Length: 256
Image (cartoon, rainbow, N blue to C red; front, side):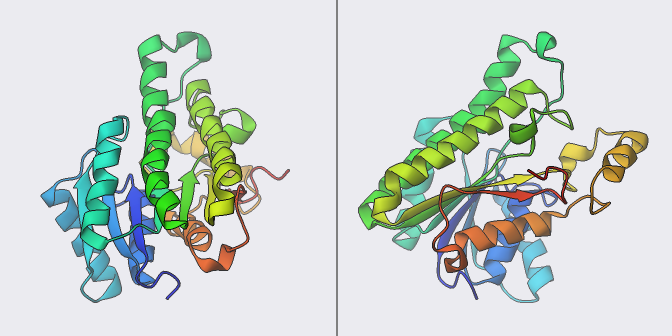
């Protein structure tokens, strides 16, 4: 078990089809004490997550769920404080909460830009701040930010320029954290998924999806389990000398 007794927050895990849920499932499988959080988290959602994980693992899963609006700094502080009150410490934060929308840059309104940045960038920033205050005292901790291929190539698949900009900011944030906090034994890395089987693909036509798949060297879309595996690697001691890195998980769509 790569994360035995590690306390991990996974943000953006309410949907059973999300990267966040798949990461929570895999982390529980590897012995982590997982706290899932989402703006839509409640007792019913948590019960669904727990039931799904237990069915997959065929054993009881100890998992907590806490509602959090990550665009609200106070919510993020309260989330981390509650996790520490439950478990006594915090080892890892997985930032996989986010929204996506595809729209031409000249058609993006100020309110649409604000919403995208509030969730994808400010939300990640606030969660990182809240976790880092604990990590700094512990002199240990690990952050994995789920960005996007859009940040590297300038959108163009399922996200618009505002989405790409928010995820690009997340990459820069990750590198800044790695540089500033490395001396304290705190690591921060990002993954850049592309064309993953999540609700983000639901709006694509079959023709558009086929055209995209044809351009992927591996000739398929990725699974949330594969994204979770990348998060597991970065969250575990297997990547102990890796920080400030961006891990491409895109089937070869963007080779650079």
